[in-house]
Each structure stands twice: as structure tokens, then as C-alpha cells.
Length: 256
Image 1 (cartoon, rainbow, N blue to C red):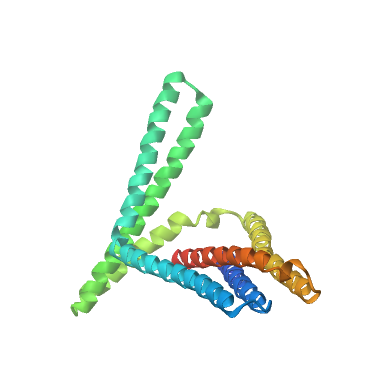
Image 2 (image 1 turned 90 degrees about the horizontal axis):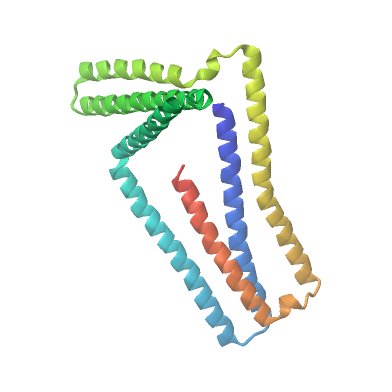
């Protein structure tokens, strides 16, 4: 499962990078084509200055937001798990309320569904509690190591190993399946991941084909690509795509 997750993450990351580079290439290529139209120098300089300034300003703005957001995440890292726990408890309260109403109506089918949902939420809460405990002992061990308290650090290491084992046992239900069931499940999940990853990778491939088609159109003497008004519209369209792609790529790798 971990290998499939890594492969899928790699494919998605590759697709995002290729898509972003292609969008930026379209923007640069549209500017180059405009410069080859033998327009007045002041017109070319104005267009290049405005569009490149907008692109650089957009990139700097995105990087600043990313930097400030990263700092915020580092400062509030300890609160994120607590917020997740509160959210799970809120969902549990809602399920308990719905379960109370269903029992009042004596709706057996709804009761069974809600009880299954309740067990799932309780399972998630238990997993969160284990994660919080592990993080707590890791912080304590780090403090003990920094203070030179080796014995205390070893005790924390034992507690970490114990709770990590519980967390692993808690999360890996696939281990309870038989070998044939496990192989079947892995085959189904693997097929779905590969198919979806291939679909995602097809997007930048199609963009590359479009790029090749545009090049052939330009070499073939296309009239619309030699129209200054049309190319100005294309330049600003490509500029918008390039800015969006930079924002998306930045957001994608910020969440990794």
C-alpha cells in the first residue's frame, strides 16, 4: 500500500510539474512569436514589460503567501491534531443525536447504519489519541536528549515504540485478511491507482501534443498566429494560465 501511495504521489507530482512548465512555456512562446511579427519596438517593449512584470509579481506574491503560511503551520502544528479531534467529536455527537432519534422511531436499518458509523468514528478518535500520545513522547524525548538525560530519553523511546506498535495494529486492518483476500484487495486498489495515475499523466501529455500542434501551425504560416491583436489576446490568456499553474504547483508541494 505504501509503495502504491509513493508511486501515485510521484505520478501526480510529475504531472503537476510538467503541466506548470508547459503553461509557462506557452506564455514565453507567445511572447516570442509576438516579437517575430516585426511590430514597433516601443510596442514590443511595452507588452513585454507589462506581462513579465505581472508574472513576476504574481510569483513573488505566491511565494510570500507560501512562506507566511508555512510559518503559521510550524507555529500551530500542535493545535492541528486537537482541531481534528474536536471535529471528530463533533461528528460523533451528531451521530449520537441521529441514533437517539432513530431508536425513538425504532428504525432498525437506520440504527444499524448509524451504529456502524459510530464505531468508525470511535476508531478514528482512538487512532488520533494514539498519534497525540506518540507526538507527546517524541517531544519529551527530544527535550531529554537535549538536556543530556539519557536514561529518561530511553524510557520515552520505549513508550514511543509501544504506542507506535499499537497505532500500527490499530490502523493496518488489512493484516487481518487472508492471503487471497489481501492479494485481491491489493490488485483492485493497485489497478484503480494505476488507472487514475495514467489519466492524470495524460493531461500534460495532451498539453505537449497541443504545443506540437501550435508549432506546426506557426511553421505552416498560419494567419491567426501572425495577427498582432489575436496574439495579444493569446499572450494574456497564456499569462493567466502561467500564473494559475505557479499558484497550483506551489499549493500542491506545500501540502506534501
